[in-house]
Image (cartoon, rainbow, N blue to C red):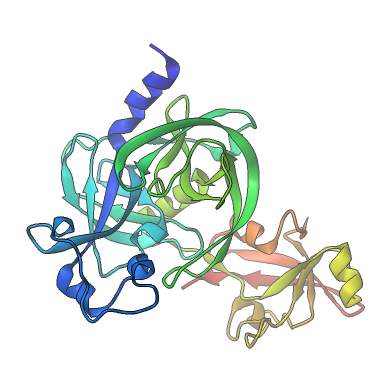
Length: 345
């Protein structure tokens, strides 16, 4: 049997379609952002929804996405933005057409990851791989609920890039955010594929499909599976996802920024105020350790901070409660500061 076909047969049973619905009476109270474009800026007093879109229970589909089952207890990984409307109902449909109501267990406060749960017998499970072992050019398959219409669509491509950074556009519920360390692929990732698995030819999940570039063909992105494995471990050990907090706002320095601001270092993280927000968050680990605005954090546990490897990247490898050592330049003085990371709320 063809390797790709064999992989699809192995993986497909554990990939799910996620349907987001809301009761018509709730939709009459407020127009969801997914439907705002229909009204050209004018909010109607009553939504005129075609009867064909309303089921027998008065529920209206307002969104959807994909996910995949990661253990026999029914835990499902998807994107946080897929289930962002917590007042809506979430229905999970398996490849064998079994249908389940899903409960949101937790969301990752940093990454676009959410974990849901269904209850059922004989649930298929996907095996998680190691994104750190990926190589450029490696063949991958993206599976998901394309456009919210075509359940379990498969596309094939290669790993086009590693450790990519993008600014993901947001909406009313999901502000724009920087996403780092992403896997780039030319496997087609369409609206509705969000939350589905990116798998290697041995059937192991190495990423979660999450974003595309508007107006560009053949450029899609997936979150590496490794942070998801850590989220699942946190859930097992603590009943929630724990992410470390340092508590600084900063700009990562390069040569150009050094010259512009007349700084004494050509790399590092320049602690600085953002708008009305202070550079050091009050009461945070950074504040308790004595870090000040206009400090330059040069190193994180002995590793240089740069555009290629930022504080955010180093924090991704840390745990809440861990003590880290920062090398800091404060005017002409160099300091070493120990900081005990807190849990991000």
